Length: 112
Image (cartoon, rainbow, N blue to C red; front, top):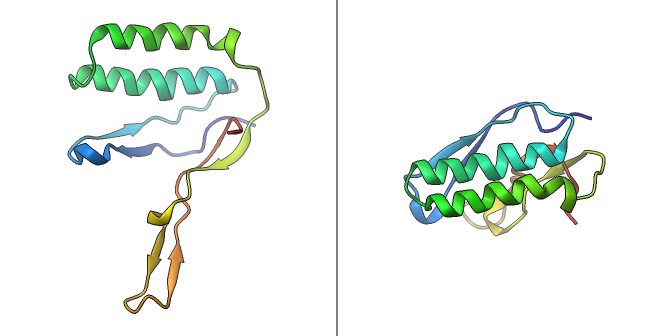
């Protein structure tokens, strides 16, 4: 199974509502490489470019990602979804009807 899902994702930093980025979802067979390059390094580079972190913090993220093959065991990809919390429930005007929103469905590593 290839990782991740087929479309790019939006990421919003809640405390800085004007900061929004799009995470790329490039197909790869290697989930460890995907998480390191397209999640951690991508967001760290974005934060560095926007002045939210210093270069030494970015370099630490880079060192960690480079050690992933030694730190993280290989496992097959799974269909997963994002966190479920109270913000995923939309109530009707009288609180009697509700809808459940399931965010961020993707293909990736199991989250134990």
